[in-house]
Image 1 (tube, helix red, strand yellow):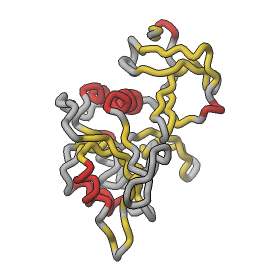
Image 2 (cartoon, helix red, strand yellow):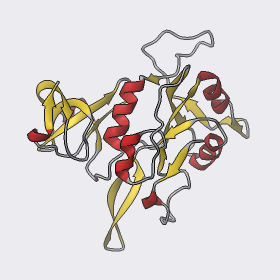
Image 3 (tube, one colour):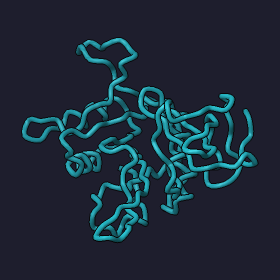
Length: 224
């Protein structure tokens, strides 16, 4: 598995060894100081698949993925929790129980076939907008290469304010598609929206989720 552990997760005993894994293939992820390399290339017959952990068996899922020839991305974010009257900043998965893996369908199939006491540990996140396959199930959701690159750019920062949002929370100004040209979200493309009283850029993974950046000033935005 081509992945590195985020430096800021290494000393937190509450985190799984798998938590904080950042794909080593995206140059922009260097902004989170993970030592990420720059060999992000589109590989033949490779796709971004979304795998879902069953029965909260995250550690077993990590072990399976660690032994597979895949590139992994697991977006993280900080939350503030109160423990014994004190506030604590804790790093948690942005999308709990979901892994993004870049690999071939054949290798992905071998991963989801792994079982623990006859119970599957990982399952595909299915694309219910597409016709069922010969096995009677909808095909796995695959994320277009460019869309996944954009999603990683939006979620690989150190910002505490990146969040998963719904359409109802997004008040789009004009529906403009913009590029972020400065700041920690530089390179991100999405729609401008006002969320929780702030101007943000919304990035969507069709069929899965929408994520909003932190506040971005108008001077950092360029209409496409």
